[in-house]
Image (cartoon, rainbow, N blue to C red):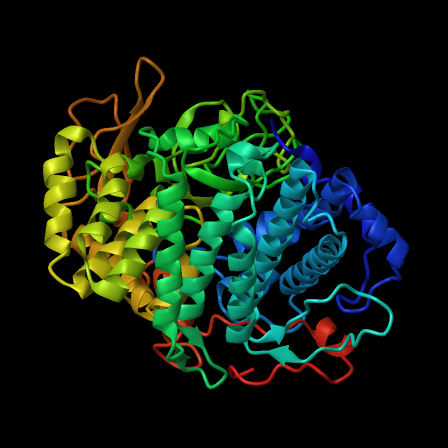
Length: 601
């Protein structure tokens, strides 16, 4: 059952909005007390927090559009001064509207979370003699804490130190709060989740399953936030650092992933593609891979509009699925990094698009590889020829495979590649290969990379790339690992090597690919992994692939040398300035409390 009402604006009517994120409209104590005095209205109060996922701040910004560029996703930011281009190019201004939208709605969500937290704590219902009431109220409290922690995690990734607001708005509050150390914020939010999770309910115990924050997701978020807190971060002097207590947070990540594995383990579904087909066909099974996904109602959500398989539609198209683009294409270095037997590659990397004739066609230019996990042409009911946004496809926030790999990473950091760490990695890889290949692709591979702590860590870095391509979490991982610039430089050099080999005729990989739509209507590529001199017959269409990386004018296509330039040679070469300036509107309304100091601004 799709949880539509969490995203609709009606929930917001309980909590008044405001122009200044710190300056609320009045909200009477009587109203708050009433809202959180009973389960039904308390549910509506917590729904107000979810409603902000339905705004562009999340559905097209934080969820996917603002998360490039990485070693597995890319978009050119240097060819426009538009807001999103500034973000892709890491040179955003204080006036950037996209950043202002994210800042504004993050603090609105935090405001509504604070109202719910205070209301629930003051309600007296958390210790109700009615067990069902007490369980529901404690579950709602955990949801509020977890959603607030998500938004603070994002704020610290994008802006560094930010105001840390934990009180509900009320008359007499000091609205102009200074910035707080991001480590203080993350540590406090982690502790709040630790305190709340034990009284939360599992996905199979709550009305809307994985379309509602549940105990599984909160346990996973404790681990994710702990790895963020224990990882590297950019300081105002443009140096990357990590705190001396970082191992304490790796221990928390290990403990809480282990807790989830112990209390609510599940086998990963065998069919990797079906995980995402479930989202495209509005299915949300519990006790499987997805722990929590943002529930978008039909008419909301931008999945398969600005991310996913490209679909060319419009009023004159021969189909009624509408139009969908893909803002974040996949570099060929990532496509070719997969083992050729890894079933995740062809799910993640789409080498086809759907044209206006509702036919398969090779992607534009040969290199516009799409995020293949979602497509509007998978929808059970065509939304209309002129449709674009609002597909209603949910967005995954965390999967169980993430928990297994976080456990493996944390265990390795603390104790090296133990048998437990190896088994967690094996569990993820087993799904990626047919059982006949497990001996070589799983057991032998994991044994080889387990020679030492460093090689096992590198294997985790690789595995997370192959497992979560297109799910747009790579940026945050590269940051906390402290290897963002290093990986960008590797990507550029890898693309140059592929271009040179293709141009010189020495490549073993496809300089051209040959494709067709077979008799059964399936899109087929003759040589997805290797170079062939010519196709066997004239039923195949030739498409330039790696040869398209070469440019007679520039040697390499401009995007190769420019897309990642500020990630490699920014204000401090070798360090990615991923922090952005706080919005000018927030600074202006702070009455001198906030300023964009440091980070070379």
